[in-house]
Image (cartoon, rainbow, N blue to C red; front, side, top):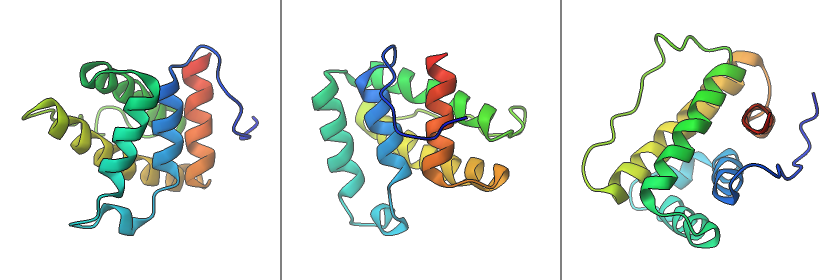
Length: 125
C-alpha cells in the first residue's frame, strides 16, 4: 500500500486538507492559547468551501477510516460528543481526531502521515 500523498479525486478538498494537516500537527499546536489549529481549520474550510455541518460529516468519515486502518476496536473507541455551537464542535472534533491519528499510528506501527494516507485511501475506495 502506497503512502505517497496522492490527491484522491473523489474526496472533498476539505477531507484531504484537514486529514493531512492533522497529521502534521505538533503537540505544541494544541496547547492552551496556541491558535494554530483554529487558523488551520479556518483555512481548510475557506479553501474547500464547506460549511461547519459538512465539515463535521467529513471529519466523522475520517474518524471511521482511521479506526479501521488503525485496527482499533470500534466498540471501545469513543464517539466524540458534538456539543455547543458548530465552531466549538468542529474544533473539539479536530482535537479528538489528532489523538486518534496518534493512537491509530501507534497501533499499527507507522507514522502519523502514513496512517492518514491509508485512511484517505480507504475513504477514496
